[in-house]
Image 1 (cartoon, rainbow, N blue to C red):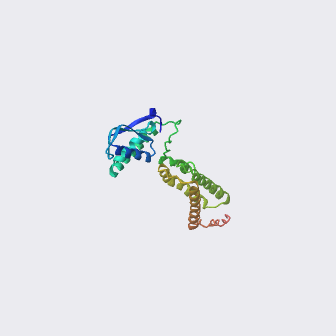
Image 2: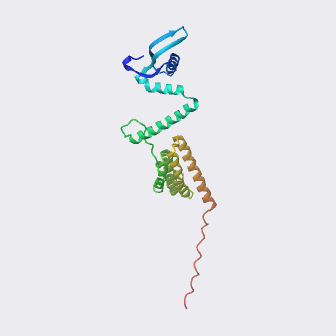
Length: 235
């Protein structure tokens, strides 16, 4: 137990039984405490007359001791109500501190919120919608896939790569809105999930592009009409 100058009086008792009970309860909850009594005497070995008994705790444990004594005197329903109230107070206090924190503070950082309208960058830059939604792996996969399809289709003369690339651009913007909501809700997809999702989107877009071209094949080339017969020489 700490020295007397480091102690504070937590509560006074005029009953030895209540004082001993409170002392045992505090010690069970790891609160350093002791009893300091004056004017105690025994009567017929059955009754203890106590003028003053003080429950002393270390100054550092004063708040914990007060809470322990309060909990000891509350019933279950009241204890639950007090716990909920304290939880709400701690939440409001932490939120107030978070608003005052600066970059030099060691406290929790304010979470980065995204806005849906930011996904329009996907029109100018393939995959940028998912990068805006804090899914950079998915954005990189879409960027590489779109430009690979365009370059491959141009060199090899493949018709299905164009529609497939366009579908990926549209998907980047459409699903980017959902990705923004996921980020704001704290449910960001892992890197592995982004890889699986991105490759699956590329596969589906490629198959859809092939099916679209196969369903509407190019019209066969028709020979140009034959030139009119040679005019007879004028007489």
